Image (tube, rainbow, N blue to C red; front, side):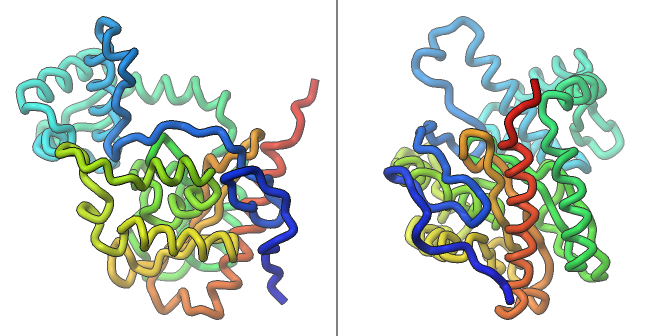
Amino acid sequence: MISQPPASGVPTRTGASPAPAGQSVPGASVRGAHPEHGSQLPQSARSVPGAQVVGRIALLLRLVGRNPAGTPLAEIVRDSGLTRPTVHRLLTSLAAEGLLDHDAVSHTWHYGPELFVMGTVATARYPIEELARPSLQRLAEETGESAFLSIRRGAETVCLLREEGSFPIRSFVLHEGVRFPLGVASAGMAILAYLPETEVDALLADTGSADTETLAARWGAQHSPASIRANLERTRVTGYAVNPGLILEGSWGMGAAIFDRSGRPGWALSLTGIEPRFKPERQKILGQLLLDEASRITQTLQRPPID
């Protein structure tokens, strides 16, 4: 019999939703919402000399990293909102420092060797990949589906790790480096469901400004605030999120949140595959497996450090 997380009886904080069984209740602190392609600098930071350049560089680095196969200049220009000469100048400068590489054959931009070195040094401070890899391997082996670890970064999730399952037909919507806004894809839905309501409201708010593209405009009417909220409610009942082909028809996904030491959802495990593999009766089995592994990682992360 598949156990389900309790729908009630779990203490909650004001504005927060109960966490699945075996996982902590998210905190109630609120972080500001960020636009889809990187965070806008706060007013106080805009007056700091060089802050605009730093923000642009960070944005370009994120855009380049979305596609492991490389990102063409035209795509970076389009999604950054910057002029082509500005983008080219900044990319060239980053390449000169070893932070980026340019493939002259495919005319695409890639992460450079200096970023690899920085990432290797930073790994020791962020052990989540080491903790999550065994869980991904178990999920892929038990289900046959592709298993993933994603991290929350501002208003997005970023896929960090992938473990391929044995089933020969796969969905390629999710891969390392790809970013989705919170509320789009099962990992982002699982995380969003356990954020405080005030933060959810800020993330789903349509500001109406000319330079802000709504989720529905970018990803379709199935990602309107009302539709996302309905999916959030279903996620809070079962503990896991289901993406029934909302990004790409026929490509389904399921996700469960991982909570940090303060009780906030900072990561998510997910499974993806084709629609026939995600029938309602199997969703319960897959969902419980996701919850079990997410709870395993959460408990390890929340364990008090050894002196």
